[in-house]
Length: 221
Image 1: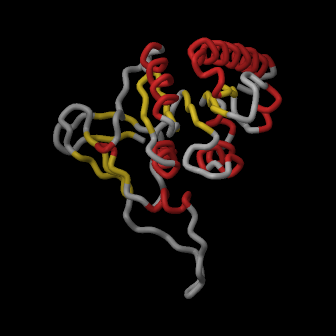
Image 2: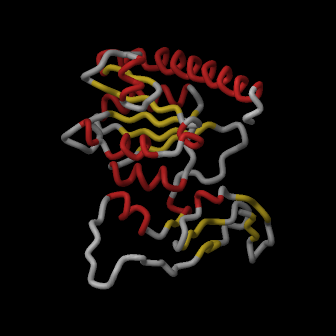
């Protein structure tokens, strides 16, 4: 979508899939910081009168009015990489943060699963690191992982997802496939997360390079 600031007349683009239908999105102009409102506050409701509808965490996120000025970054340099960190343990978080700094990622630390869902709803992250126990008592019902699993493949394949686990072995490819993530890192190996991440990212980039080349040869892209 092409956006024009009504104050300084600057022009810029934002992905159409980041503007939720029937919602108001507010974001600052990257030049003059003037707040720009996009979309409509009118919300359609196809439910029947007096019909009660179950509200989930995903529905709550969709119902929020988004203000981009509250976010840590909305305009990152062209080659900049972004990451979302979903980890509650301070000691583990510090080790991951140190590695993200070294790898030169712009990153966000989610405070809760709901916060993580909201961040992902409006930002395209290159990498997401999530502990399977993050903000849940049941790792198999992790809201962040469920959201990622539901993403369409054209979006999901552009996100590298690393899952921190106490149940599964590091770089267990079969279990990673089962959990719909790209890489598993066991907590016991957290001190080597820099090497593990670099290896996992390299393997993933190689796989998708071959995948895209195959699509080109068959004329699918």
